[in-house]
Length: 279
Image 1 (cartoon, rainbow, N blue to C red):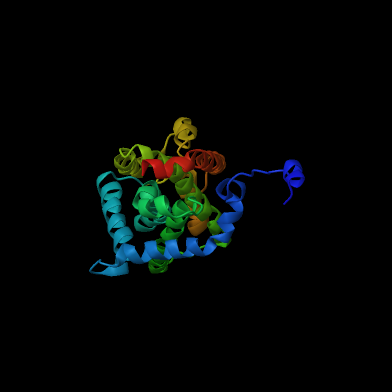
Image 2 (image 1 turned 60 degrees about the horizontal axis):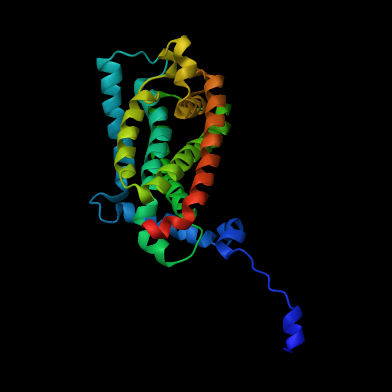
């Protein structure tokens, strides 16, 4: 190139690939998302003695304990719904949320070697963990179906809304997990705080009881917990008229989860470029 050409040439500096094409890269790396999700499912039960049977035993044993505590000891009514069905129908979305949130919160730290050495959209890590939770959920849903057949319950047309509340449960875990996961990279105490919050959340969410027992004057305040609307909506899709839904709680849950997810993505993207420094 001649000197005069160099003098009039322009140099255009663009943002790095991770910034300029981040969202496009999410799609380009979709196979990595699949392999990460598959790895999480396989590793979860690889060295377990009874393997994937834990996906059946965990909700079943928890259902028995909650039924014993809330039905026989606390004497909380369940209406026309057998208590085991009431509990298991609320336990499934809660365990999906609980397991996904706990794993997402520690996913970045657990994948520190991968994050510090290879470029890929870091958002794929929490996404893969959330998707991996669907495997256990599918098995637990079969257990609930068998229990409903045993008691003579069958879902009505409301079952068509089940995917909506399933997505809401996943987004609630994903949005919360983005906040906790990003914070855990710098503050490792977060990984110890999350299990405590989830343990408390089990009892302040309508898992072992119906939200209908909450006094009307406190119900709107109670519904600020977005999992209230998700769990009640999930029960309604499976039990139909036997579980009257609180539409205000469902609407409030949808709005809150939307805000939580968008704010979580915003904070995650804001802090993502520093992950490798802290990990």
